[in-house]
Image 1 (cartoon, one colour):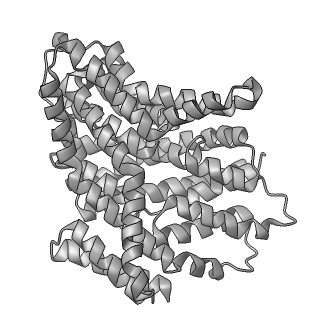
Image 2: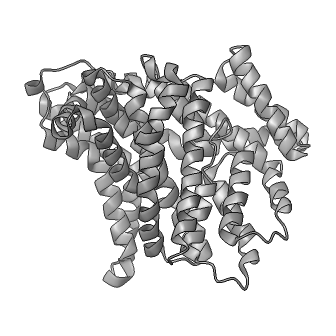
Image 3: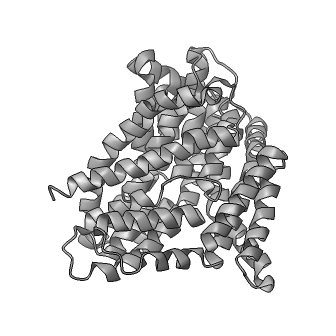
Length: 449
């Protein structure tokens, strides 16, 4: 059975990493080959599948991560991250700083991809934790929660936007209902859950962060008067959000405004994550470098240091993509579809269940969501279920239990310098809580809409 093979493969992966201390990248590649063979994939296609998964994953995130790491390093090394951190501490106070970080993550998360938001916020969060002498993960987990929730539920993120189109749902209503669901979910899975996580995974909260992304924020400490102003520091950090928001607004209203096609194409290109991060890095080179009389040679040293710190993480993410692709090409998703044929469960719960099982089996939230859409549309014939809530139920199911076949699992593990056990105890449980809360609030909302 494909699901048994996947489960055994994951056990082998955990044994290689945790028992034999094998490098995570090598372990992922080895297990990708083993699972491909066990699933009965043609031998001639296995290498191509592994390479395709690696290429697809890195093709989508390598430039964004690389440029995002450079941007974060520029802001941190110039003292901009310290200035933002100190201002947040001053405005919110030390006791409410966790909520300040959650608010920042939620606002940034509406416009930014999960990965982009992470690389932008981690240097700032690290500076705050360092200054206040509190746990990096204590602030980092709620921040990552806010980014994950917005990624799962709120347009213009690709998942909910594409699902809405497939279901024929109103994107505006998806956004409204998504916000109603997202706010309480962030509160429960973010600051409230972090208190419990600290009790059953104390080591994750007590250690000095050694993660590759955390090191980007580990810049020298400045006297506050020697740092850039809050306005220019915040503008530089938020510039990706501004560009993406502008692109989104123009795209949404392109028909009403009757704008030229060439202009729309240019705006879409500027709003693409890679272009956004490139333009943001160029801006930071001026605001955090040239304008502060920092030499180009020194700026480039910072850029090289930031890239060196995330090199292994990129390989691990690529290998995670290889594992995901092997599961897709091996037919695991198709097998899951057969399990739910002819089911009579409520469409909202059924959609969540299918998305959850596919997510657990093959890792990708986006693939799980899109596969689910194709499976449940034929089952909805003759039902009066709310399409906007179907979108949100699908999104909730697609992020459950992030584990070793999910790229996000490795991003969080490497960003915060966690062990496998600590990542399971914090991030995997957190994502499951987001998923369950999402379904619960969808069901409650279904009583009123």
